[in-house]
Length: 337
Ligand code: TXA
Ligand code: MG
View 1 (cartoon, rainbow, N blue to C red):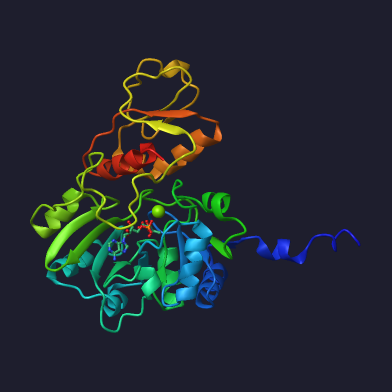
View 2: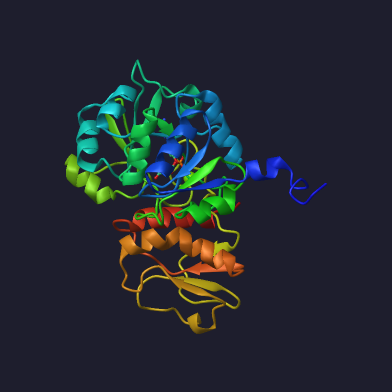
């Protein structure tokens, strides 16, 4: 056997390809999705693990690749409102939100339209469908070319930290998916806000990239739902497991001092006592800017894991604006596993 022959063909074929964010890369990603393969792709929030949402076998592959324990419903991504209206039934509130925030980090849960094409597996058999028009140019080019809804959860192993770069995707899924389209770092950094518009009620199911305040301003009323306290009523979206977004390290919230051997996740200019002795540190935003902090949150957790943190202590972060989504992710990262 020669050297080349000793490398099984499969090994080469099973590596995940990294596609460039150019015309050739996007059209190859679209071709792969249309033929039923799995492709990681950038959105403005986090990288998604995309499959043709009309193809039950392809969608089932998402759960296998992520090692997701149960068939949670997935978000179907589409290129524009027109495509979304073929899949879901919009009431006045849903239309108002879509017009205000799409393309962007908002997911709407709506009744399935009679001619909707998103398969049962992607909807977990529910009579509703979660729809989103992402705000990232590469994502929308891809969706236009696929020309079908694309089901995509975040492109990480189940329960782990969501990916905000193509390297993060490969760290979790190399060899398990066909390709990742490398569009660089994502801008928003936390997942989309999930709002349900079912039965004439508007409810916030998951805080995310569009703030509660922005939704209320557009709707003209405050949104009920999502009590974030531990054991609260926040877990109304199926698949919102308590433990999620978890780094390997244990996470300790509300830290006002750094204990022995801890690492510290900072926000703003103040450092709690013991910071100088911390085993590692990362400041989400020295300027105290919640938008910057959201965009760096998942990278920070991965970074502290990579330097071998046992415990990540986190200083208190304001609960306003994007702080609600940041604190939601941190609470899940800290939840018992
Ligand atoms: O920013 C994002 O939303 C990213 C990017 C890739 O678009 N996607 C994402 O997907 O975070 P995933 O699967 O991690 O989260 C989807 C959320 C889950 O909490 C799920 O329970 C909820 O949407 N969801 C999906 N379909 C639903 C439905 N029919 N009813 C209620 N909740 C639903
Ligand atoms: Mg996820």
